[in-house]
Image 1 (spheres, helix red, strand yellow):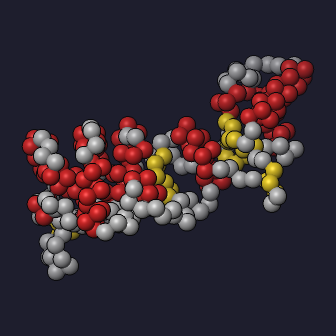
Image 2 (spheres, one colour):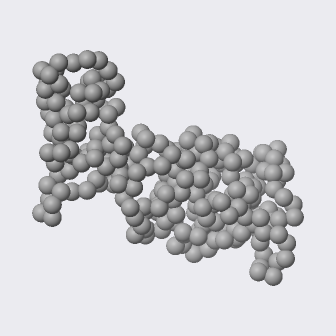
Image 3 (cartoon, rainbow, N blue to C red):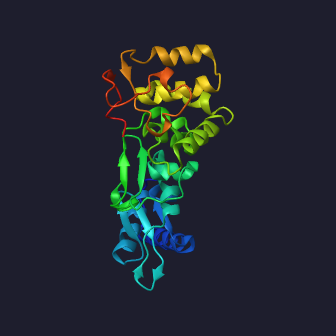
Amino acid sequence: MIASRHSPSQSRGVARLVRRRIECGGERLWRFEDFGDLPFTALAKALSRLTRAGAIHRVGRGVYYRSRPTAFGRGKPNPAAIQRLSARLMDIFPSGIAAANLLGFTAQNARNSKIAAGAMRLPHKLIGHETVIHIRRPEAWASLSETDAAFLDFLRHAGRASKLSPEETVRRTVELVSERGRFERLLQVADSEPPRVRAILGALGEQLQKSPTALRRLRDSLNPSCTFVFGNLAGLPYARAWRAKKLRRDRTNICDDAGSQ
């Protein structure tokens, strides 16, 4: 961003340029970085004037939205625009039903959106007050694709968001983790995952006959006195070998991480 002194005529020129770009951009979200070639002070004043005039809306610090007129008043930011901007602000991923939907476990769409993110918070004005944000996602997730992260989220919830039968849920899970390189990519971030996820990954890896060394490393990371809730994935052939919880009367310690939501 250029920060320099500018005359009133230059400020007016910047204001005209900003307005023209925004008007030509249609319905979308704007940030200061979108005007990196313009003087910061003049840009801030131009955006402030446009906000007061109702031409744009300030939805968060340094974030503005140009709406389109509708029969019911001004429009709200559409999900696609939010997703594009959010991808630039931070790494966010679908969670819960949204993750299950992406992976093919359900056709249902959540009434209240859920996303998984890092420690940085997005303004609710930007993503919607009804959106639930899970911010306890490791930095390692930044290296994952949207589908890989959704799969990890699905494992964190032990497949509870699946609307398939338990047998079909297991079949679909194995199908997804069998895709080229996925197990290895997930293994790279396994150390930052709750014990339940590592146990489920171990059961999947053993079924796929993955590297014994990698599987031994996963097993060694688990407390041998604990059992883990596999939920809808309890039907995995090697679930019991990876200490899936049997029944409620199972008196061994259940060591699922309560902070994995």
